[in-house]
Image (cartoon, rainbow, N blue to C red; front, side, top):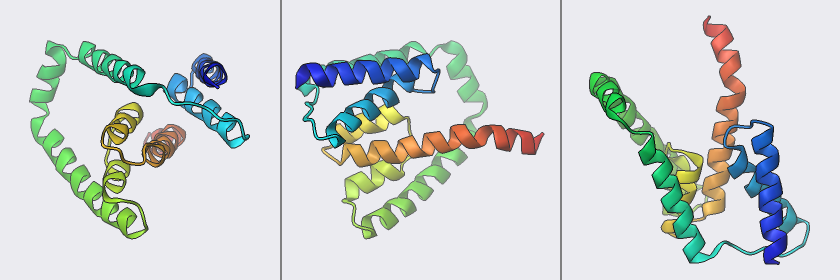
Length: 158
């Protein structure tokens, strides 16, 4: 079971990474393990220690990208950033209420509706014992939509 799961994750992750799919390693591993599961073969999760290590690596990656120029850029754009954050939180709150009324639990609803990175939102969902699969799939669809629509919007705007 463990070998099959790891093999599926590695093959799927490397395949989409090589195809240069944004977040390809993450998406490829997730899809490949899901396919194995849906095909009727049992898979296993990474366990607490490996999940903790993965979260630390994600935090390390994000922290390594923050430097003085990042802080200066954010300082110069503080007002628009605050408007975007407040607007997104209000929209996320409204969407979370809709998802909750549609049958999802409150934490899953909020995390699925909240803006954020795919891996970070999936990690938060796992941490808060929400339905991490639902949260991740919602964010995967959101990111895929942005990736597919960006070239169209850029052409339209220019």
